[in-house]
Image (cartoon, rainbow, N blue to C red):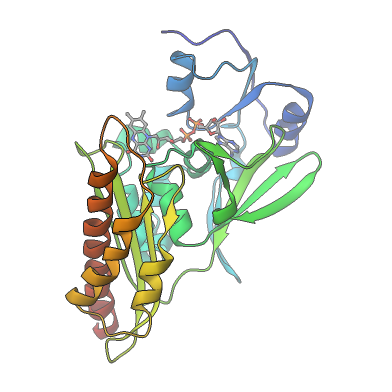
Length: 291
Ligand SMILES: Cc1cc2nc3c(=O)[nH]c(=O)nc-3n(C[C@H](O)[C@H](O)[C@H](O)COP(=O)(O)OP(=O)(O)OC[C@H]3O[C@@H](n4cnc5c(N)ncnc54)[C@H](O)[C@@H]3O)c2cc1C
């Protein structure tokens, strides 16, 4: 199918893009186009105006600041994947990116586009939830920020207004020797996950978990932080038994069902993948602290 007719706009600055968003109703931003173009072609989206933000160079960057790491919304997924800074300070994002689509989709797809498209099984929103990132949004009315936990409004819909644009995210990286893992189950490599799990762990010299983040994707409309799992870990010595028992809390999650998998299948995957992610993260924390 072909997209419905729309007027194309090609702003060269953030101000120009925000003016266009403020003055045109039923407008859509075009970032990497890897989700928007299929949505247009299938006529799931029928905007009157498409505002192409690829000409705004200063929205694409990865930088270390006094308070953490800041990433511009138009940063390509490939640029994140090869970033030395992220490899060193946020390796879970790199591991997740290797499972996002295919090289050509990552060459064009952006972090802002992935967060705003908010597919329930997408890897980057899951990582954003695992890291508790802050999302920065601008419009002609001003700027505001929100935690990732408040970003999803409902299914595939971020809580931003039609005249607002996501401009960047930032987060505080975990300690240098933290353990991390991103694991997913998909029908084929490059497909969206049926269920995915991310784990971040800080571990003391005697093997006790001092900080934990456990997050699932693909089980509901938005990434799910597994607080029950996290609470069961902190203060205890890491072991396969601990991780398996803690992950069992995910058997009770309110999982969705669809043509790909039933509720029970997703609950089983949630337990299994969480347990594997925690085990891998713990192993890496132990290796990284001893090297
Ligand atoms: C074959 C194929 C396989 C894929 N597999 C995966 C996969 O396994 N995992 C995965 O996560 N993704 C996958 N994707 C999707 C891909 O990661 C997209 O890049 C991503 O979902 C959207 O990013 P984009 O930059 O292309 O955004 P676009 O498609 O340009 O935009 C997506 C939506 O976000 C809005 N938007 C974009 N930027 C902003 C902004 N800054 N502020 C506000 N709104 C904005 C747009 O208006 C649109 O509604 C796949 C895509 C393809 C084509």
